[in-house]
View 1 (cartoon, one colour):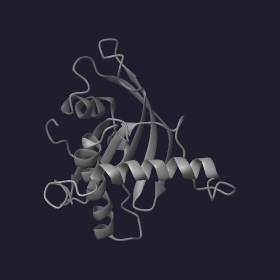
View 2 (cartoon, rainbow, N blue to C red):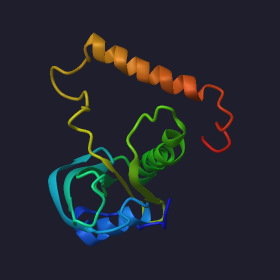
View 3 (spheres, rainbow, N blue to C red):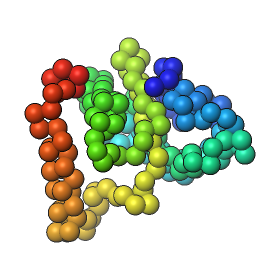
Length: 175
C-alpha cells in the first residue's frame, strides 16, 4: 500500500483532486487524474453511509481503472455506538488488506483503498462497483434466496473455510 490517506468523512470531501490522491497513494493512478465524480446513489446504512459513483478520468489515466466505484464511510448519526462502528470498520479493513489478497481465487475485487482512523472514528472503503453482477438479498420477495443462490453461497463459504482451516497465519498475522 501507499501513503496513508486521511479517511473521507462525508461526500463533500470527495473531490476529483482528493480521489486522484487516494488512487495515486495506492498505486492505481500513475498518470492523469480524476476529472469528475457523479454520485449516482447514496444512503445511510447501519453504521455507515454508502455511495455509488461514476468517475471520469483524464485521457492520460489508465483505461483499466474502473469508472463505477462503491464508497463506504462512517455514518456519524448511527445508533449502535462508535465502538461497534470501529469494530466493523477494523474487521472490514483486515479482510480487504490481509485475508482477500491471500485467497486463490480472490473472493472480491481488488480494493482501491481502505482507511481507518480510530482516533477520529472515521473510515472509508473504496472498491469497484459490482452491482451489475452482484446483489443484496434484502427486499420483499427476495428472502429466502432460491435453491441455486443458496448452493452458490454455500460453495463460496466452503471455499473460504477450506483455504483458512488451520491456516498458519490465523491467530498471529490474522485474527
